[in-house]
Image (tube, rainbow, N blue to C red; front, side, top):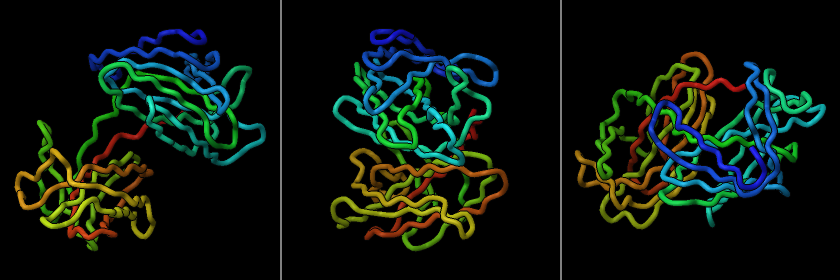
Length: 287
C-alpha cells in the first residue's frame, strides 16, 4: 500500500455481500508484518505526530486491527491508547496487550498481540483520523478491514422475567434486572461476553438517569460501568406497555476457560428495574 492516495478494496468477512471503499489520505508508508503462517499482512505505523487518515464509503462495518511496536527490553502486559476521529466526533479506545510469540515486524521487530475494535460507518462518505494518544511505545501498527462483528448467542437467565423488546423491525428477548437484586447466569469459557443493558422508565421518572451495572464472577469483579441513558425514542416492551425502555448501553468483557457463575446487579438509579440481554461470542486467538 502506497502512502497517501492508495485505495484498499476489502471484502467483508463471513461471506456477507457488503461493499465498501477505504481511501487512505494521510499517514506514513505501510510495512509488512509476518505472522506464524508466514503470511505478510500490511500494517501502517501510526504515532501522535503521524496519524492515519482515511475515507470510508458506507454503510458498512469497519474493523481496525492494532499492534503495539514493542519497546526494547519491555515485559509483561503493556497498555496503549488511540483516538479515532470520525468527521468531528472523537472516539478514544485503549488496550492491554502482551508480546506476540508468533508475529514480528520489519527486521525482526517484536510486536504486541493484535487488538481490534469496530466502527459502524453510516451511509455516504466519512473521513477518519487515527492517532496514538498514550502508551509505553510511540508507534502502533494499524490494519483496516471491512468486517462486521461476529453475531452473538444469547444466554438464558433462569428465573428472570422476560421482556420482549421491539425497536423498529428488530425484536429481542431481554430479561428483567431489578435494582438492588442480583441475577445469576452460568457461562463456559473461553469466550467474549456482551451485556446489552437498558433502564425501564416508569411514568413520572424524570429525564435521563444514571445507572451502574456490575458483573461478578464469584467474588471477583469482572466489569462495572457507570452509565447514563434517557427514554428510547423508538423502542418499546411488547409485553409491558407500562414501562418505557431506555437507549441501549453495552458492557463487554472476556472469560477464560472453565465454568463461570456470574451475577449481574443494577444500582445507582431511581429506576426500579432494567433489562439485560447476555450474548456470548466465540473467543479469538491473538497472534
